[in-house]
Length: 264
Ligand SMILES: NC(=O)c1ccc[n+]([C@@H]2O[C@H](COP(=O)([O-])OP(=O)(O)OC[C@H]3O[C@@H](n4cnc5c(N)ncnc54)[C@H](OP(=O)(O)O)[C@@H]3O)[C@@H](O)[C@H]2O)c1
Image (tube, rainbow, N blue to C red):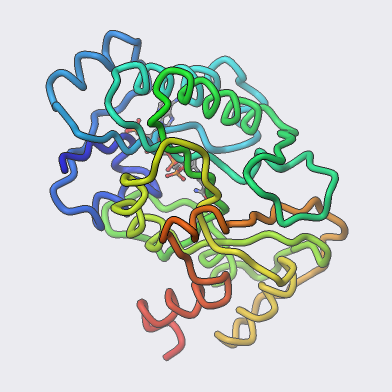
């Protein structure tokens, strides 16, 4: 299967390129118009497009909603409009305004920021353009830095490098090992069109998760309670029933620790 990967040098895209041998990297789509996308697809002739390019920083989207709309809605809608199967990464932020405690199934959305509203619009419009589109709602992801790829802060790296961090003692939210996200893409491309919660689950709060990691790696980071934060806790049963399984948050962290020999 010929895979075209957008954002191949990004945090997630680089790991997908690593995991899915033979995948074709797309050029930057920052200035893309509908025509650019159509020409790219005609040149590459992919069987499937894995779309990771995005503006994924929430404050950046708040500050520049127009740029967010181009990156997070228009580009994926144009990709879906080519008629090639699209697998696009969405976000657990679509649950950011839910009033229930969770875990949240796919149909219980309430986006509370520009990024989340744009991602939810992207989900609906890409499915309208091509009902075969697969939307994967991801949690926050982590990994150690990768050679040749710009390093962005993430839960694990921040825990290893910071002297002091705050996490909520009430917020239920998972973090997912991005290598699992990248590895499961070969199964995700076979899913029927629709929206799927795609990542780890977590029965611990974020502060409990951080305290577990601090103890596991004997870290010196000082952890403080950030108080009450909204849950972002996904129910991943739908993807599991289709054979896409992730370790829970603590087991995913254990796998990453073992992969990099961090506990030695
Ligand atoms: N990282 C997370 O923890 C996380 C959590 C939930 C969901 N997600 C979603 O997962 C996907 C991948 O996230 P990521 O962390 O890999 O993102 P990222 O590293 O921040 O960005 C991925 C790529 O997007 C491209 N890009 C940046 N600005 C753009 C713009 N204005 N227009 C078009 N393309 C642009 C860049 O590629 P070029 O430099 O080649 O243009 C960049 O390498 C995104 O859809 C994100 O919303 C990420």
